[in-house]
Image 1: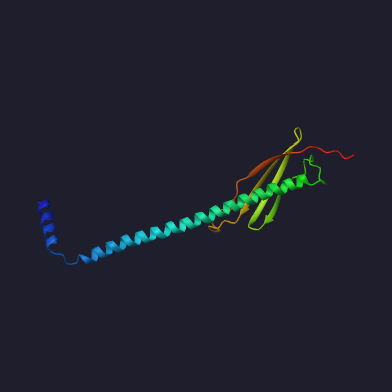
Image 2: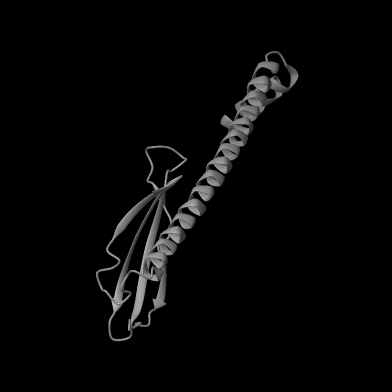
Length: 148
């Protein structure tokens, strides 16, 4: 009996097309709105990712600058390169961020291990974390020089 009612209703709806345009228009509008929203979301997400990648590259360059600063301190002739307190943790401000570097001396081998971290502003917004470049580490060997 229920099947007969459904068939009767289906036949009636096939014969009568009044009011069919409104649901069709609403359906097409809904699909277009979803496609448009998805396209906008994808585009802005790509722009944020590119900005974040650029900031990460800047942070890495800042960390490398910190390593270079530490190496410059070690290479300065007026400094004793075997002084274990020569490279305490220091933060240096640059355009676009800061670099923090420090060094530890292995006195048995005369080798410095220098670690630096670069930080730059996060372009994706203040509610997210700052962009921290990966720590850049290097080592430098020193040879003591004797003054006559």
